[in-house]
Image 1 (cartoon, rainbow, N blue to C red):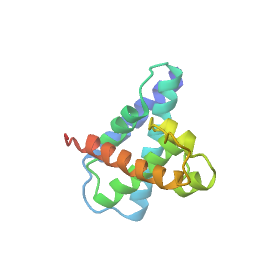
Image 2 (cartoon, one colour):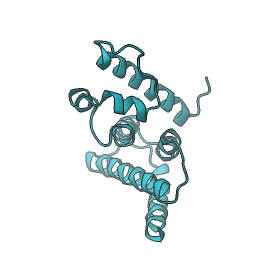
Image 3 (cartoon, helix red, strand yellow):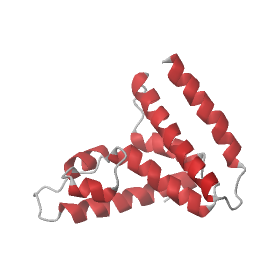
Image 4 (tube, rainbow, N blue to C red):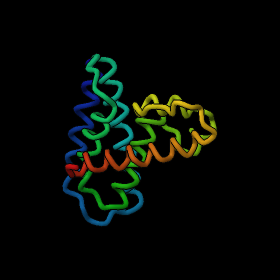
Length: 146
């Protein structure tokens, strides 16, 4: 686990550099930041599992994304959505999850109760729950109290 810890420290050090960047970024810079966020969350999840810390995915998500909240809005939104896909959909997009019949699995990961009756509209239910979860996470990352 020592190597994982070193990777975590590396990402933390590089992440601090991006805190001061709120200017317009080139597409290349934006893509670099998004890749950085993706790598950092993967390391954080592996670190959490490997060291049996037992952090909830929401906490990991908020910790990682909070470090990038000072980015320009477009970069922030792209990073937020990418991070959400990695953490809750194992890197897939929502439409891929809906098409692959993994709705129950995603609801479980999101810790959202499944409808009591197996309805004919689980896709719509999941989409609504995903929107609510994203709104809650955005508020947590932004520091907005409800």
